[in-house]
Length: 392
Ligand code: PLP
Image 1 (cartoon, rainbow, N blue to C red):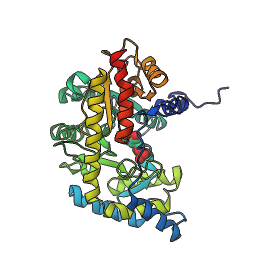
Image 2: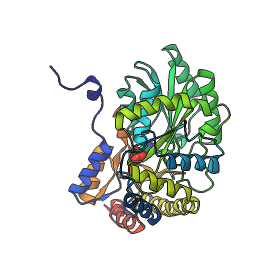
Image 3: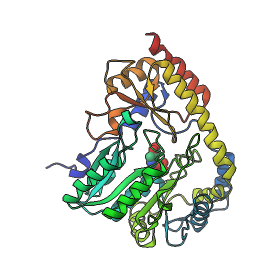
Image 4: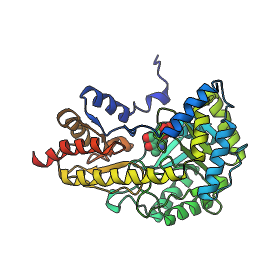
């Protein structure tokens, strides 16, 4: 008798977290996992200390402390002109990670199909499998700068129709790992397809405040006809550099939110109460902070881009998020996994093999991903090590 469930047997351990362990073993610079090495802003930390001292230390309401839900609602009104009812439409979760799995479990039935753009953030596959559903993959091609053809996407959706139809599409913009911010035109086309073929859009917008140059984040829920068929997911991890606080949320119309709240309640009961209070205070006072955050990341992105070009990689300059995909073929004849191992062991820089963002190991073998959510001195040191590649 096998003691492992069929679902658990279908996916492997997170490659990204495995790379972090390797980075620790070789004392390498960790450009693999997306967590900042710099402190969280003082205003959010002070608010958390105050909340603990005020004894906000017992369970919050399972779907989120009222102060945080009201702060999120006012943020969406202020930034995106989206009206969100804090009483009925928000579920605060333990990170965007939990918000995503709770949303998938709340809306997708066993056997139903969920479309995911490939390459994808590695959690989406297991989320769909754990819901008993079937992932359908749609490739974004590096040759086209990770843009997609609407006609090709419609063809895949049309095919899925013949096998019972698509229940949902998972969108991630700004995108990990490609750095794309999907254009207004792409979002409008997705919105039209969602309405024509009647599928939900579950959108992971965790990097919404990290966008560069003249790009702008536009939540797909703000497009005509999309509010009722979208679940918008975001969180505090990336915006406030508090990945260890585990605070995220899902926004949807009440009918869907009711289901997400039930799943969330039985998965985790609730997110840390004092941290929710701190998050509420931070969100209400963050407009200037959002600007400085994006500007600081732009500096890191520009440095990382220069370093990787000088090291000999072909790179795509990200429009958002804090990752850079690099084509390794001008630097090595090895595949992604072997090269990533060489980088961590011999050069002291940990990265992520491209194949971990694809369903099969045939794709992405010529790609690796760098995370640049690190201070400039750490990126400079990584640069010194990586430039040796061009000389060896
Ligand atoms: N979604 C994407 C696209 C991510 O890249 C990450 C972290 O790397 C997460 C979600 C995780 O978010 P959280 O820390 O809120 O669970």
